Image (cartoon, rainbow, N blue to C red; front, side, top):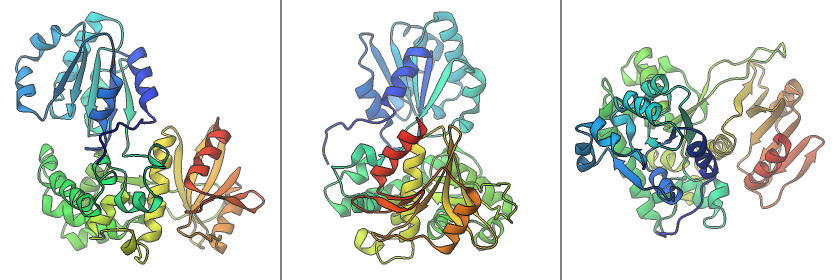
Length: 388
């Protein structure tokens, strides 16, 4: 695995956060590269103090956190895995109010803003949140093939391994570590139940999920399944795509769709070791859809995303709304993609500004008026132009 640092798209946003806010938070799943990013990003002429709250020696430094942090006024204080010590946030608020100015604290967490409620309450107006994802295609293209990216996912230690077997083993270890160690941060969750749920979601990846049916399979209540699913979402392990409840006059399917956010993790949960196994697997289409969705979320964090489906079978995978524009995105895991009758019906219902059919093609082409077949790279180029 190469030790070379690869630039991340959110780096410029993080720099802006440090410039304009006392506290900048970078949130994202474990092992997605948050620590590596800040070590290359924070090159101030001010000293940098780095604390990893999973390291006992760093935790001991915070036995008396007020005394320790008060002595860091001239430093940029980076606190990794901050969700392990949320009681720091009121103290940080007090210190940044006393010190004035910006760029004092950079906090990293593998739990979402909602799970860090105390930070939102204590640091309102003083903190900006930036989300780092596993590698986006724009960040990694030219280093790996699209097939490797699909099979291994975007986590750096999985994607950049030279040996495919080592990549697969890393993902299996990641899943076990999350279940047997990270899960212990939150009470009321069973590793065995969470593993079974996660595997069920992998089998149903990108589909509408019936919580009662899943609960029946797990021997758990609807409410318990919802709590487990919420935790997976708040720790960036799953993504939930809501339906577009449009005023087309059609009967809309209203259940959300659930995606395991990283294609490599899906493959590991299903015991699929490489692309050759994926290509003939029923999950192939949903993996491609997941890849497109997670890249859109990473490239355009402020956009609204939905799916559209009616009881009559009209459907489109992703509906993107931003800057007053509505864009329909259909994902086809084929080098010769074609729209179905249901796709065409949905496009007629939605009247989008443009429709993209995203496929693993080398070069896109117009399919019909208002509809373009595009590669992943071409999609982002076109979207940036349309939404700017």
